Image (cartoon, rainbow, N blue to C red; front, side):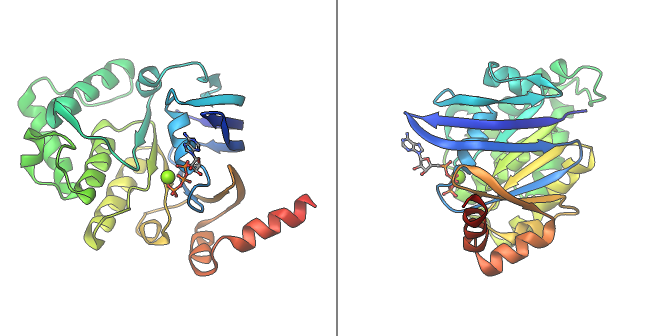
Amino acid sequence: MAVLEIKDLHVSRDGKKILKGVNLKTGPGQVHAIMGPNGSGKSTLAYTLLAHPKYEVTQGDILLDGQSIRDIKADERARRGLFLGFQYPTEVSGVGFSHFLRTAYNSLSKALEGDDREVFITVREFQKYLRENLEKVGLKEEFLSRYLNEGFSGGEKKRAEVLQMAVLKPKISILDEPDSGLDIDAVQAVAKAISQVSGINSTIVVITHYARILRFLDKLDYVHVFADGRILKTGDATLADKLEKDGYDWVIEGQQQVAQ
Ligand SMILES: Nc1ncnc2c1ncn2[C@@H]1O[C@H](COP(=O)(O)OP(=O)(O)OP(=O)(O)O)[C@@H](O)[C@H]1O
Ligand SMILES: [Mg+2]
């Protein structure tokens, strides 16, 4: 069970107000999409959910299963089952990709004890599990012996983020533009990997600019329009197609009329 609740969240960075009252509630097995113009604060929301130290919560709260995580640091949030797939993954030289995945998997499993996760006793067993997941996202085995993201192409970095989600099986995954820079086959593969993880009752929040990846998902419960630091409108999957066709102006203008 994992319910994430974002309540009237206001966030600033370097004194600039970016989030201006975000409200969102997600439940287990739900798939949410967040779409919105450049610079509207989508990545800020993602970073804030994982406690990036540069983002200051000035008002509101974030609850996980009814408990505030506002003052809890990133590593503890991860142990409680939150995961962020970055829009711009960082290269971490000196940290082997497979070592990183095994360490993360084991510490998450320890924290989520009793959660019915597979236990991999040997490195060999874990490698087998990794290989199955590599195949899903279309990465070759040689990536496992490289350093995390170092020298990966743009698309390879994105596949590697989704691979992490597929391997770690977090309770709640926030994926920040998992489809940007991906070739057509990869978009479909990534959507399939997302559907598999949501199929085990995990929550997925996909931030994207394109309806294409959403069409490949097995299910999509809600589409949220994010503009000027908050969610302006929520609809079902058909909203994504309408946004792709008509843009965001009609939502933003409609909101302004309501405010007047
Ligand atoms: N340190 C900073 N100082 C001032 N403004 C900042 C700072 N960091 C971020 N911003 C601004 O905050 C806004 C929100 O940025 P954010 O990355 O969250 O947008 P986004 O919705 O993810 O956009 P995109 O779709 O392009 O990824 C932008 O206008 C950005 O320029
Ligand atoms: Mg962004």
